[in-house]
Length: 114
Image (tube, rainbow, N blue to C red):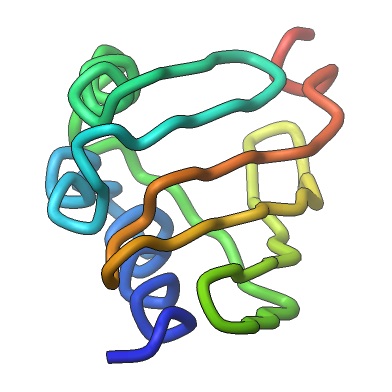
């Protein structure tokens, strides 16, 4: 499976109704690193622990507007549908041996903070 297909499956688990956060662990390397405006994690288990803390089956919806892949790097432009309205964000994803080893999310967090 190519890296853009892995990302589409990852997003399907995360943003198509009930999030099923714990299921995304299979897509991550053990030394996975996450960076975003509201959280950071240095291992896959730390990341899963943080995202499941608010509930493993929250309803979340997003649409991938653009997905570009080149070898072991994929960039995504995503529109997240939040209760405060749509939030557009970018994701930078790096792969190693078919699994996600780094994910960086860039967006304006103010709607989540108000």
